Length: 468
Image 1 (cartoon, rainbow, N blue to C red):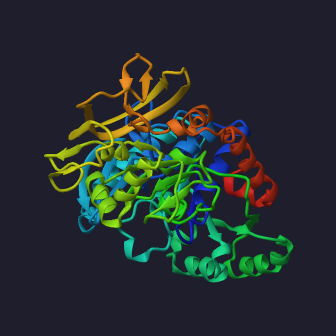
Image 2: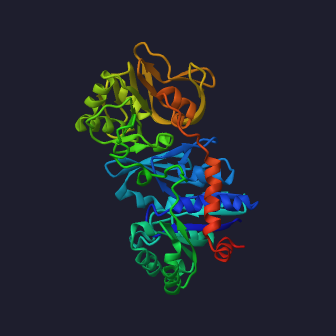
Image 3: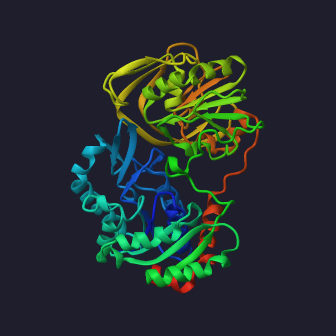
């Protein structure tokens, strides 16, 4: 079985995914066969594996950093919030069932066993598994039910790293308090801690790191600087741009930030876009309706917030409108959900910008795609949706798939598509919006992240953590 390294945090969004991805790349560069693993993830940012099924985007990025094809075993349980305290549970890449938060832990013993089974299959085929935790490792109210953090690390015999974010303040309390809450069995797993996102002269914190080492009785892996030039695909909404960001006068593109927005990684090449939760007092050249895990609820929210009328007014004023997945469905004339797969059974009138009718279906479509536009721009993309949309009037395709089948709908300045990831193509962004974004260079970012880890880590502590 592979050696296991566990990366846990003092809280959510402290940089666990960064550290885990950096470890994946660094160890891969050293000639080891490495695989990522996260027993349970909660995110609407997902990606379909080539083998079938979907997993969280952070594990996809980590697999890419390892030079491996993403697979369902890397993230056996994925929770996709759908509203009303309910989540769709993805098990081994496939829809299992939708459960209410209060009922979820009734299924924990079964899901824990399935996660352990996935881990064993993954660990049997590589040298090292880099495990990522979720939230804080010291959520004491969840012990006995949680199978994402130190209980899973203990099962795997992992060496654990505790990551804390100094930018949010209280780093001494967060590290020492977390360690103090751990029972002896879990506490013994933690071999080192890391202080992340330090701004300025790091030498000013050397004495602080020494104090933490003395109190914690474990070594500091390093004080890691805040990096402006590196980025990873966002795991969840905590990493997404906040509503109201990007509304400078030169912003040309607006993105609607739905309450249950999904796959915000679609917009990694649009860093200057304005994210909206209410109508602004200005016009844009393009408005994007992204994916959402609750299409009918999102459509109702558009109307309640006034954004539905604003989008129609923007279109009338000359703006281009693009809908992706759930956003595409909303642009049509009607959405029907007789089975309640999107929430409660029901139907609703769409925005009427495309002559399209959508019916929600129980079977989920998850697949990768190669596509091209009528002008010849080629791009890769993927589908993750539970509805089928059909034109009820004259439309042109958004694109053509690898088998030449038409996909999506275009009518004038309004476009709709199920193809997530399409806007990760600089050529397609240039064709749709008239400007050329920066070239995506994920491989370079993975290498830079590994360099960031190696340069700022204590060599001896790193060697002990990874087992030599």
